[in-house]
Image (cartoon, rainbow, N blue to C red; front, top):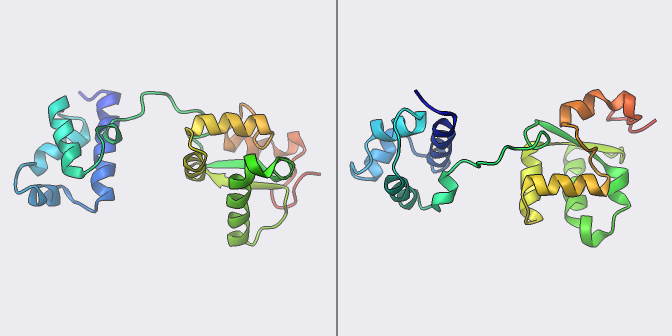
Length: 179
């Protein structure tokens, strides 16, 4: 039976393979039979244990660091696991540009793409938060903490809670902004 970790490892292996546009058979073909489709598939399902040596060899085959194949052992925060995160643009606008400039530019770009210029709040996806964390050279959890410190994100709430608590917090409808 698969453990949660072996399933998470398998999901990482599958994600890397898919990013490279390879099917399981494509892996076997590209490796000239070194990596059998059935074996790689069983690693990806978590049905078969992969040794450190084989994992290292697979990382070389995919051309990625071994660490990219390993799942993150830390539990993710509630905010980074949600589908939407609501940023308070008014708080963002009051921050110094040297600190919040990248976030402000990112938010401005999203607003322009959506033709959404209410200037009060902006919902973003968890994937956007991951991209921003790369820009800020920190983990999504570290960036979440920073956004809370800046007052751009409410503490202890995931995106769904932020959306549901709009009325209670006085944020109003996302399109209208605070009341």
